[in-house]
Image (cartoon, rainbow, N blue to C red):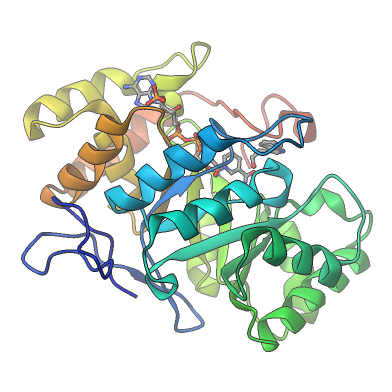
Amino acid sequence: MNSIGATAQPDASGAPPKQMPYIPNLKLNDGNEIPMIGYGLGTANFKRNDSSFDQAIVDITVKAIKTGYFHLDGAEVYGNEEELGAAIKQAGIPREKLYVVTKLNPTKKQNTQEAFERSLKKLGLDYVDLYLIHAPYMADTPDELQTIWADLEAIKASGRARSIGVSNFLQEHLETILKTAKVTPAINQIEFHPYLQHSDLLDFHRRHRIAVSCYAPLTPITRQDAQGPVPEIWRRLATKYGVSESEIGLRWCIDQGLIVLTTSSKEDRLVKYLSKLPLFKLTPKEVEEVAEAGKTVHYRAFWRDKFDADDRR
Ligand SMILES: NC(=O)C1=CN([C@@H]2O[C@H](COP(=O)(O)OP(=O)(O)OC[C@H]3O[C@@H](n4cnc5c(N)ncnc54)[C@H](OP(=O)(O)O)[C@@H]3O)[C@@H](O)[C@H]2O)C=CC1
Ligand SMILES: O=CCc1c[nH]c2ccccc12
């Protein structure tokens, strides 16, 4: 698979123009590669209790793919796998150039193999690049979580998911599945931004060579109630590098070796991310400055009902 496209649209084969700068893919612990920036279908474009096909989701996703977002982050619970599948077909980029992610629905008990088959069918694909357990809370006991992980291992062994991983796992959940795992998760997809840095969890990931995919990376500027010192630093760095604050926020994840997921309703923003992000890099001192300032505030945007207000894990 090619690295993510940069300052121009990909050519007809889906390959980014060779002379353009790009963000290299990240190599996972199973040898597969993942584009370090992904386009999420879970926030702006998920469907609430509405089963009718939504062409608007297809249209914006086709635009994102044609802009060069080849890493597409979906999930069964977002209710838009059919739209994602239609967008993949319509965009006309060869399947092997894309990196398609979906996740096991955390809100209902179901047979994992059957749920996975349904996802593949809705997506119109014969394999996904990454299949995730959406959240550990779907299991009532450690045994149950280990069983679900074994189901994912069987799916990987069948070749229908090239990589398998988890999402929203804390260290205790990872330790639970690692006790019986034959395959270490390739990725843990977690909320990650300056106001939620998860104390020791990143170290644990490094020790086990589990890559981190960051969702809600722009929280300091997208959430009214996430007040703190970070936007001012992002603004200063944005001026220094001639980019937007959002681009500083995304780069802050990438410059720590982390994959980053974002979305936008604005085509212009999506285009700029791909053209600007490969052109600059934060210094280690700047990464540290944002991290230190971020640690003075604690804010969680998702899955709040699972945590006490001051729980920073
Ligand atoms: N595994 C899980 O449990 C979860 C996974 N995810 C995944 O991660 C993806 C990304 O998460 P998301 O929270 O959307 O990511 P971001 O933190 O990147 O937020 C994206 C939003 O930021 C807005 N934005 C960008 N720049 C600015 C700015 N300067 N000022 C104000 N708003 C701005 C965009 O709005 P605009 O449209 O105006 O550009 C867009 O709606 C999801 O789509 C989903 O796929 C998300 C949550 C949970
Ligand atoms: O994955 C993101 C958070 C989330 C959890 N459940 C739902 C349902 C619909 C959209 C997003 C989410």
